[in-house]
Figure 1 (cartoon, one colour):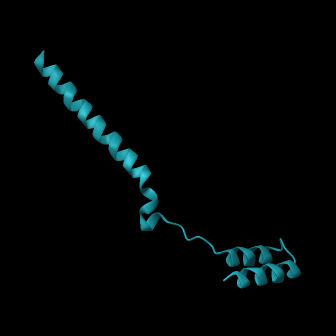
Figure 2 (cartoon, one colour):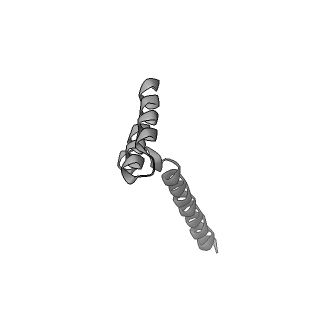
Length: 71
């Protein structure tokens, strides 16, 4: 009967190790360089919206002037 207790202890330890590994993987996954996505700058977003026709040329020029003056 002692054998079954020993097996159970090892089993619990392995589950504990896997759970810690999975938590760490999800908790720090954003720090891996190959998983990061490039974030667009506000000017890039503005250019995309203008090219899609979502905003007029006047609105584009006004917003561009505001963004460039903030730098």
